[in-house]
Image (tube, helix red, strand yellow):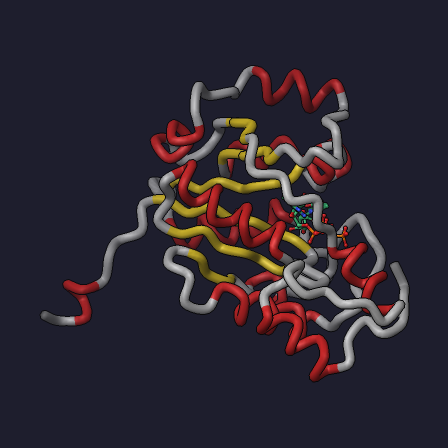
Length: 224
Ligand SMILES: Nc1ncnc2c1ncn2[C@@H]1O[C@H](COP(=O)(O)OP(=O)(O)OP(=O)(O)O)[C@@H](O)[C@H]1O
Ligand SMILES: O=C(O)c1ccc[n+]([C@@H]2O[C@H](COP(=O)([O-])O)[C@@H](O)[C@H]2O)c1
């Protein structure tokens, strides 16, 4: 069989963006559950080069990318996408989605995933309403971050809500769904703090990530 015939065409893609400073098991377990709930062909973890609404990450972009790549290596349907690292300036999601649309075309179902902490700030994102003409939005509940979105955002998404997660892959853009997942209250802030105080991070991140952090001496000083 030729390579061409072996290649499976991609009809649905979800992107899970983050600072991933570092990537942890909360992100990774969520990624698997998102992929299963949506039934997407690919779930792409997308490290942000310059997160627009927070300070500079503790690790360099290439180091955060290397940790995500190692963490998803061999996981079926999970991929890393480095496009934001190839762009200068703040990593606005709307720019990323425009870039992805240009590459994937208009027919592919594209879904952007965000946790409730990110969703609570959505009204501050660059051109946030345009996200919905480019992609669907999947909101992940995080028990440690109760929903407190801006009223404009709440009204906007209410009009776009679909009945279940798998419906998002039936449309290319414009749908909204809230997903409850297994709750793993792990955060990168807590991991950085543990490392800065010399504590173990075993079972909070995959071993390959813990090894990378140790090898490169990352997060030994707490910047929170
Ligand atoms: N434990 C978790 N379970 C589910 N989603 C999570 C979890 N941690 C982070 N996320 C989501 O993953 C995305 C990327 O998060 P991010 O890289 O900022 O991780 P974080 O752990 O929240 O980091 P930090 O503590 O540095 O803010 C966000 O949409 C966030 O809501
Ligand atoms: O587009 C924006 O204005 C925007 C503002 C804040 C965050 N984001 C994106 O949201 C994702 C989660 O961000 P963070 O800071 O919670 O790691 C990440 O992909 C960011 O690039 C995007």
